[in-house]
Image 1 (cartoon, chains in turn brown, yellow):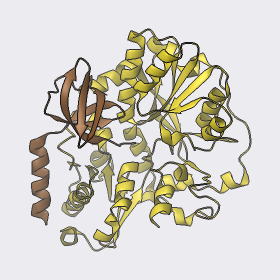
Image 2: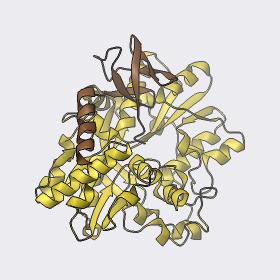
Image 3: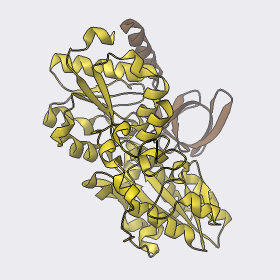
Length: 69
Length: 345
């Protein structure tokens, strides 16, 4: 069950954050990411944000994929 | 692109993540790969590798008058020796599907006179969420919440699988979100001890194709290492806060994997500091001694989980064993190999 969805952090309150993806909003626990900030993207799994998405690396991956083509 | 780097002989790559299997079929990635690349589905589905004993114990808990069983959805239809949680629910047992282990805390708070048991099934990704849930439960002083673990660890299972020479693998596609938690370092033994290339990959179709591409480059170069296609989420060290939470609540233990038998150090058990939450210690749970039925004996989930045969090679597949009437766990879970083959055949 590796299912994890990328979502954007809208606001933070204590150990929880409001995250959204399109029109879907959720409240998730952010204790695994104590330094996360609003505006950042996270992977959400089973009610928790488990890792931040590094946007620079994401862009690099996209670039590599385009280069391969 | 992949066609340019693929060698001529058959290349066998194993992926060990149910979500990789699912994405692979859902997006028809087989069409994009040259026919000599064979992608094998390993035991990456924690529901699939839960033992018969575990399922029977969840049923024992559900049958009690004083309990509420909270579980992830795909556990519901898992067949035990003689019943399933879905059947028990139909007969009046209080079994509730939850999205997060945290939901079981709310259920416990709202039902102070019931004993709530959360079925803690998953790999390291889920283990981290359960660890934090148990810590929260302790902080809140919840006395009616318990956890029945069937948590498994990926690296020991990989080490065990790779020892089987029958597998004859050329590369390994490593899970994405497990790796977000544990990082890349735990996979170093794969190239070092087994001279096998491996690569962590994400879940979008292009992620998986790029992961396979990176593996093929490693195979061609003859220099196996640990590749990281999912670098936007996976780092060398992983998520340290998550690992810390796991270590605080759990210790490693031997664990039985359905189809694979007991693998040393491949499971997690609740530490004594949190024993008040351990359903195994609190409830009297029997091991079932009923013999396997003829159907269950013909079930080939064991070999399918090891990637030795495809679902089509199981005599029960698609005739006797279907998603509506599943025999083994590989057909029950949406991420199970047989369930996916059936859907996309």
